[in-house]
Amino acid sequence: MGEEVYGSGLAEIYELIYAGRGKDYPAESAEVAAHVRARRPDASTLLDVACGTGGHMAFLRETFDVVEGLELSEHMIVKAGESMPGLPVHAGDMRGFSLERSYDAVICMFSSIGYMDTPEELEAALSGMARHLTPGGVIVLEPWYFPDAFLPGYIAEDLVRSDGRVTVRISHSTREGDRVPIVVHYLDALKDGGIRHFTDVHRMRLFTREAYERAFEEAGCSVEYVRTDRFGCGLFVGVLK
Image 1 (cartoon, rainbow, N blue to C red):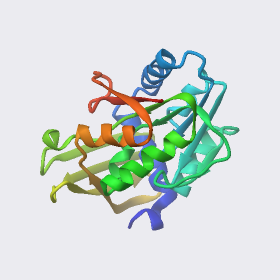
Image 2 (image 1 turned 30 degrees about the vertical axis):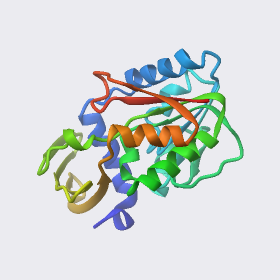
Image 3 (image 1 turned 180 degrees about the horizontal axis):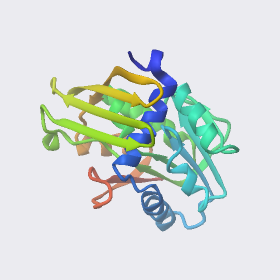
């Protein structure tokens, strides 16, 4: 079963898996906010592109006056609304979205940019983010792996235990040129609901550092690549010229 069949449950498991990995949303949000404020001290509005269930937004709203999200999955949007009532999450695809306002900062986390399939889609996504910036606005982007850092055949596993529930996620990655299909299997065992199994395929793309930097430049932004222990793939931080 894929997201179409198990969509609402997938959004819930997404949160369980990241919690089990110890994802530190407060610390990540603080670092992102610091990068924004270092380049735009008066920043007060922020858009989180591909925000998922809103894990970062929940903490960024403590720093910025206005925080909004953009998300493609309707199930993630519903889950974000349940977790953060009052914080708007717009339905849209980062490859081509148009909102009615601009923001002092636009962020894109979780290496979601890796879902772009071609350099043209990468450039379209960055251009869309830049179009939604106020003058001097900041983009903070968490990339996916650069081609020379990717490990073909990589297997990842997670096991999360909670009250009356055990959830297992296991994935296997292959490389086809610069494209990487990641096949994911889930087992979700509920004390009162039995065991459910479903699969998902994430189709990712490896872009070079130069390709990311070129996309920022094409979007009219200066760009800096920041190495950071908290984000394994680093961060790109761009400023609209």
